[in-house]
Image 1: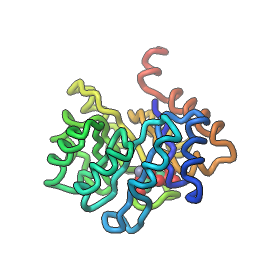
Image 2: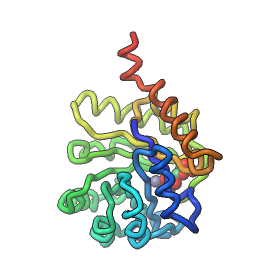
Image 3: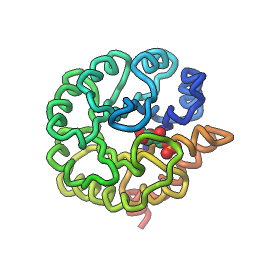
Image 4: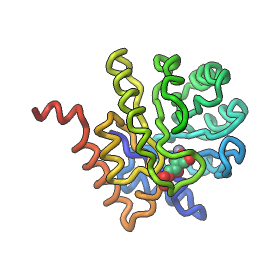
Length: 227
Ligand code: DX5
Ligand code: ZN
């Protein structure tokens, strides 16, 4: 199970310190939200910030592109230090060539699906991706409420993975707190992106430890072993 704090919820005056803090607190990955003001009604930060933070931590950089023209951004983020680049399935015909471009850059590739979008749109790409991200809020802002109607999409993603014997990770992002993380783990998620509930906690370390305990306790695979 992967715990990935989202830097969007950290103090924007010290992204570097926040990234190093997340590593020290026991995070597995760092989730980096890239918003262009078009794909979503918000602007976050660019490759320069990722490049500046990169030398400060060995954490795996999970770069989430919420952008209308990701094709112009893949190389700058790859060079800046991204380990994985996530694109959105809502980009339609661009998705296939973008997946190949990310792979050509030697990075892992993720595919994100927004709450209103049917998970079936991701099906043609399942063999080609390293991670399937089920958005659990409408993208664009941190601090939003978890959308419970997205839980069946996580279950479907897990069922496909099992039936087709695939290895992609199943990530969830948006409104993930101790309660919703447990629900997502039971549904089959294994990667948990959380901003407010981690960077907003008094102790980042305690919050990460608690979330890890909760998702492990609700991991269906471990539950089977206990029987
Ligand atoms: C939203 C982003 C999320 C967000 C999560 O568009 O993709 O990563 O930062 O923040 P919380 O956990 O506060 O909902
Ligand atoms: Zn995100």
